[in-house]
Each structure stands twice: as C-alpha cells, then as structure tokens.
View (cartoon, rainbow over the protein chains, first blue to last red):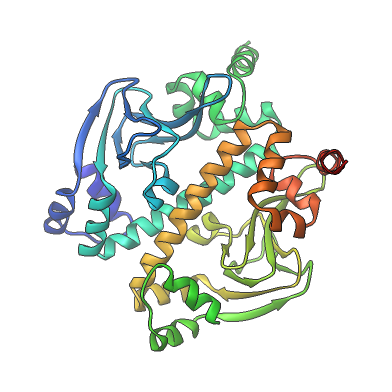
Length: 190
Length: 190
C-alpha cells in the first residue's frame, strides 16, 4: 500500500508506524476491466483510492447510455461524495475502465480513522479542496470552450489519459457525443 | 458573527470561548450590489463566508459576457479553491449579486486557524466534501436534462433562489443563454 502512504506524505507527515495503523482500515481489491464495484442503489457505498488502472463513476441516462461524471486514475479518490456524506444510497455506478487495483474504506471505517488520526482530516480536507476546485474548473471548460476546443484542450492537457481510455468515455466526460469525438479524431489525424 | 458559529456547530462542537478566538481570524465586509471583492489577477485571494445576501464567482468569456461558475448564498463558502490551494492568482471574479455581508479570511490566516484549532479541519473537510459532491451532482444535471428540464428542475428545487436572483445569472449558471431562459419563463407563466 506504499502508493497511499506516498500520496498522504505529499500533504502531511505520517511515519511508517502510523501508516501501518492507517493501512489496517483499508482493504485492497483487484478489479478486472468492466468490473462494477458499486451499483446504483446498493446499500454499501465505500470510498476508493486508485493504486493503478482507471475507475469511473457514471449514471445511465434516459437514452440508456452511460454518462461518465468522474474519472479516477492513479492516486485519485472516487465515490459519490453527497451519498457518502449523507449515508444514503447513490444513483451512480462505479466501475473499472481497465483492470485496476484499488483500496477500499467504508464510511464507518473512515470515520473511525479520522477520530483516531486527526491529522488525516488535514489530508482529506486538502484532497477535497483540490477536487472541488478542479470540478469548478472543469465547469469553466465546459461553459467556456466550443465542443472542438474542449476536446483538443483536454487532449493536450492529459495526452496519456486520452490515449489510454476508451474514446466514448472521454466523450461523455466532456459532455460530447462519442460520434462527435470520433469525427474530431479523424479530422485531427488527417 | 453568530451565523458562522451556528454553521460550524452543525458539524463540530465549538464553545463560545473557542469561537471567540476563531472569529478573530475573520474580517466582516459589507458589500453593495455589484461590488467586486476579488478581480481576476488580483494578488490577494481570500476565502469568503456569506452571512446574508448572495455572491457569485464568474469569468468573462470570449464573447465578453459574464459566465457564473458558482453561487454562494447564506451559510455558503466561496472562492477559487484551486488558486486558493496553490497560492496562485485566479482568473475568476467574485462579486456581490445583491447587497451582502460576508466574512473574509486570508489564506495565511486560514492556515494559522487550522493549526491552532485542528478540529476546524473537520469542519472544512466536511464543507468541502459536500461542496465537491454537489458539484458532481450539478454536472449530472447539466448532462442529464434537456435545457428546458434543467431550468424547471432547478426552479422547483430552489424556488426562493430562482425568484430572487437576476435571471441572466441563473441562466449562465445552468449553461443556458439568458434569452432562452426568458423565453422559458414567458412560456411557464402563460
């Protein structure tokens, strides 16, 4: 679990003995591509830290297609935070986009962890502050740029991501149709 | 400043003596309608808690119009969290939509506050967790609903808000054009 320890140490000091105790609150889960770790309506919603691979959170829209709301690659956390906070079920699905290893912590365990290690509050406060700021910035991108600009700007900012994730997911994440993105890609490479 | 004390006490215990010390980190600012408290590029970006009134954060797009990214009404916090975290200037403006009273805390003061009162970490961690969750949910609304649905769903969920805020702001917040919203309103009342 050294990936999590390294990530925590970017924000707070946590020695090996402390991390050993922190690690005991987590369970490691290996997922194959397309495995669903949370299904809309399931009673137990956990919080996931991605060690490697790629996860996404999505819902199924009226037209029956998956709409990606959030991605998580290495060192990112993912869950439905409103449902996690309010202890309700979620209307989202959380799924492995490719084979992935994640650390899972339950709501109750996370509460216990924060009680026992108050400095982990600083870690999560910082993580959430950045994630919230990034969500507002994504909103700016979606509002500010034309459909074509947003795709190319996103591709320039995250080339590895765009090249390694199925294009229909990148499309829905950016609020574009998969058909539109594949047209852009043909144009971009011609 | 009892509004802030009440809000903090929704999430953590903080007695009167402690709150008195916490309050000393804040400065109260009264704003008239349209007053701008942060202007894109300003060096000093603070964090704002709204006591009453309504603030919004926006940018000016290519067409020279204001695009609202976030609102804050009573008991909400607002700033550009990425810039606040990374100690950079912001490309956003933060402005009073109507006359408002806010509490302002600087980056440095907030750091000092969190060091002195570690339990305030729990307060901000919870606030950010909810705000991030709500931002993901707003993304779902924007992706999931037709232009018409999103306006009426938002109006049904927050009637006071929609009726008290200028319609062009509600429109840009939802990613709609002001003309489109005024057409919908005429339709809705006819």
